[in-house]
Image (cartoon, rainbow, N blue to C red):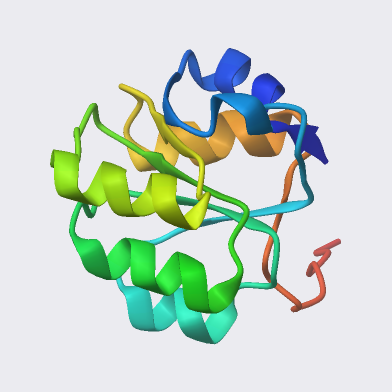
Length: 123
């Protein structure tokens, strides 16, 4: 688990909304651009990493009780999306890392994924 402040540090991320929520703890993370996958596979209080910057992302976060959203690849959402996130109290972060690298960096720091599948050990 990591705080949002630690997520910002690991991803060299800037905060678009939710400056007062940086001490919030996130327990799992999910990287996805298909919101149907997010709805199907995330747990509540999950950190979502995505390249999508449309309002569907905020609606999905709201319905799924996600803790925060990280926009990857330096993609900046429009001001209307930022405003809706602010109203809904959903923290938004922005990183220049591509999704694969951002997820990998967070995983290295101990943030688990949403998978409920057991880890397969080969030997």
